[in-house]
Image (cartoon, rainbow, N blue to C red; front, side, top):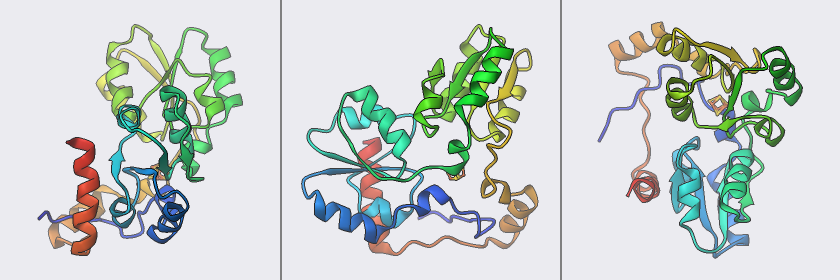
Length: 226
Ligand code: SF4
């Protein structure tokens, strides 16, 4: 029932591109009893093929409640993080976010050496070797909350660098250092203020989802929030 505008139709997500509904149907046929959990960074038709969605903030709690086999799509690193937290063996889709993958453990180690009092927070889409160096593995929302609560004055942040702007604005007395200056998502950067303005003026480009996909995708989203 909502009007959804995408100010730049090219602003997709390479992680979401890594699983198609067709490929997921084939995988489901190999694991007919598995519960399919799809990360919200996925397209509507993939959600429609899923039993339940999750965010990086609630993935552990969602998977914890599931009995039996779990097929987790599309991010293998978020999936392996969830597996380590829940003690469950998940069937992982081999997807990844190239932006989070670009953050290397050597970079984090170097920054830790230079800033021995700093805390390290990273997103669960980062490589496991990077997660292993972190004090906290958190969703972006979790990072924003944590930044306010922690006593640390210097925080090394392992996620898309755009969040640094918000963290600095909300916590002017603290220092935030990006774990990697290369962690810039070119797709996210396509959405500029100018394009948002044009999109709102023209009420286009609109995103439309076929009704049968919308209904099934909503079921998976409702299962997450319900
Ligand atoms: S940072 Fe970019 S590529 Fe990675 S999940 Fe977000 S939108 Fe997708």
